[in-house]
Image 1: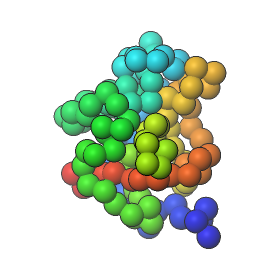
Image 2 (image 1 turned 90 degrees about the vertical axis):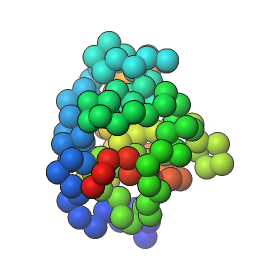
Image 3 (image 1 turned 180 degrees about the vertical axis):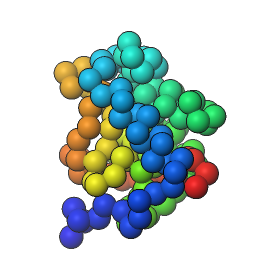
Image 4 (image 1 turned 30 degrees about the vertical axis):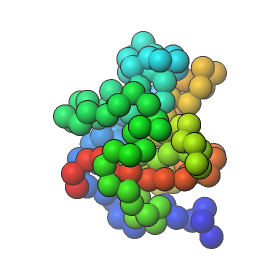
Length: 131
């Protein structure tokens, strides 16, 4: 079943490092249009700022980020990969951190948090770090 797909390997060192880096901002606020990992970010601002730390430039739009990097199959997901939601019209991005979990700037109530990657149906996975 789809819910059992959690990735086939532990991922690369850079992917794990990015996932660990992103996870340290859990508990910080969500802010529409924001890009600050500490003062507030929206979903794409969060991933943009995390990857900036690794020398990767991403646009501040989940829809635009969905075209960055290499598209990979959900079964190949590794920590550090970006998970997109929204079908034909991408509206949210999160970062996979392993064990079926993502870290993301979810909404103004939850802030930056971790959830199951299946809180909604993932529609695309992109690898933006060179693995």
